[in-house]
Structures are given as C-alpha cells and as structure tokens.
Image (cartoon, rainbow, N blue to C red; front, side, top):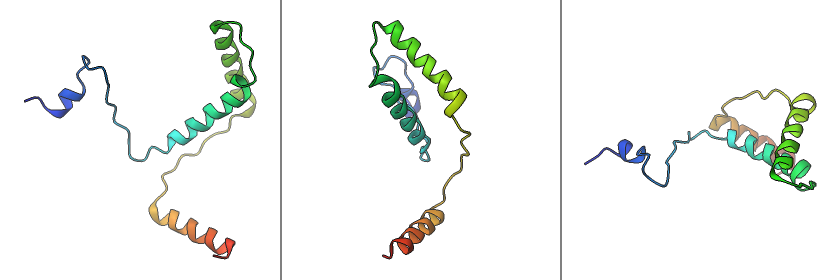
Amino acid sequence: METRQAYLSDPQHRIRFVYTPKHCSWLNSIEVWFSILTKHVLNRGNFTSREDLRQKIQRYVVYYNQYLAKVWKWSVVKTKDVRALIDKVMRIEGV
C-alpha cells in the first residue's frame, strides 16, 4: 500500500491537497486585500474586455502599492495574549 504522502501528492488526481499551517491568519490579510480590490475596482468598473479588466487591476495594484500600502509587522499571537486582550475589552465594556 502506498504512503499517504505519496497518494496525496500524486499529480494524476483531480483534487490537489495542500498543507496549510495551523497559524494561517495571514489569509485574513489576503481576504482584506481582495475586499479592497473588489470595492475600488471591480464593483465600480466598466470593462470592455478581459484585457481591459487585467490592465485596470494592474494599474490599481501599482497605485495601491505606491500610495496606500503599509508595512505589515507579522507576529504570532499566543493564547495568553488573546486572553489578556479579551479581558481588557471586557473591562472597557464593563462586562
């Protein structure tokens, strides 16, 4: 019998399994970026072709990187830090 890894990494399968780290909150940042792109370009856009859409997205990416993007300081939040934050919010809210 094949190993699980060999089975899952077989390129002949229709579905490809990819390991996602358990600390994958970086996906939240990506979701935020696509939300911004959708609001600023896609929802307001009038596109005459796929090429027009591609060009407008690329122009927005250049604009965003030049004027709006900020450095993202990445850190892993530990459970005790989350608990302290929840406690602080509870104190502020008077709960």
